[in-house]
Length: 262
Image (tube, rainbow, N blue to C red):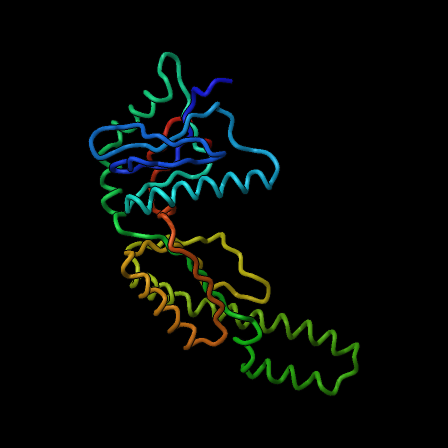
């Protein structure tokens, strides 16, 4: 196969002089569009990256590393997800197809680059530990007291019932906490994108999982808000990741490049 396709890493306003390398050490280069828009790519043979889990994991890391390097150099990027490949079509090369797409969507791409300038993505997950959250509930206290004087076989049955009771109570509390925590996170971010498919860890009731778009100089405000939540809710289990390039807020999928895998 010939390298007549282009593998896309993202969109920037102005490409740095030294873009470095991407997956498998392939050199990155810029496809210029109208003023203020350029695509970062490497030449590619066309087949998506797929194979053994270890290989895919390495490719994803190399993709992300390249995106993050350019993001830190430029201050803003519309990052593409892994395995976005632009193909030639008829007499049009992949290069010309990508340039045509950049020209068509230049205004919206520039607007989004402006909106993301100086912003980072943080990912936050807040859950409630079943045992700590439900531990003081009268029904749980009574159930634990009942365990003490029962034979081992009955205790096993009662412990299962106790686990279900703690789960039900903590999930009810999680539903009660949702609106308040959502408002707190919304107040310290420019945009909030919920992940409603998130699954909590064992013995945890999920309150919410979200990506936050935050000004780089306001990241500490998110940390302070989460610290306040933790102090007020000892049973809270909080995961806090980032800062990263704003993958969840790039909106490239809404104006998808040619031949992006669906």
